Length: 113
Image (cartoon, rainbow, N blue to C red; front, top):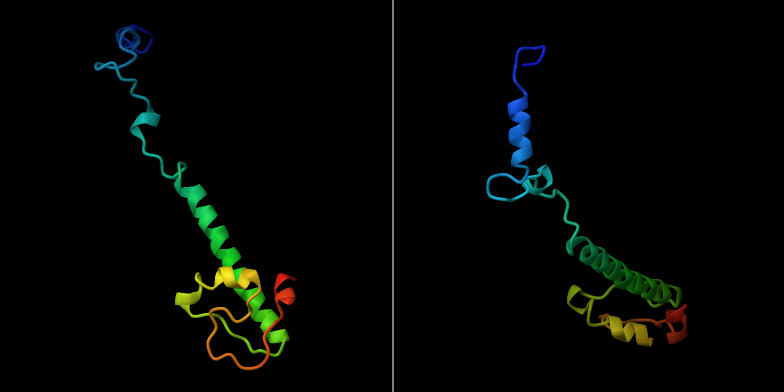
């Protein structure tokens, strides 16, 4: 017994004799706790998708600004043509995916700037 009147030696001996628990598994707090944040593949994929979508929006915004400066009007492609028109815009087609084209369109060189 210690000064408080309890016997802590038995408890210490029991903990030391079974450090891995009864089944042989290490029961740590980390193994019992679920991770609140996804640190495996979700975050990198989310970051890559976000960067790709922002780059695509930047390409279409740049094309819209170039067409506006060339007095062709301010237009964005329809949602269905947003992804399909991207390769043509990158090749220099200022009217790819746009409907009701009136006025002048930007030159392929101005799309690269």
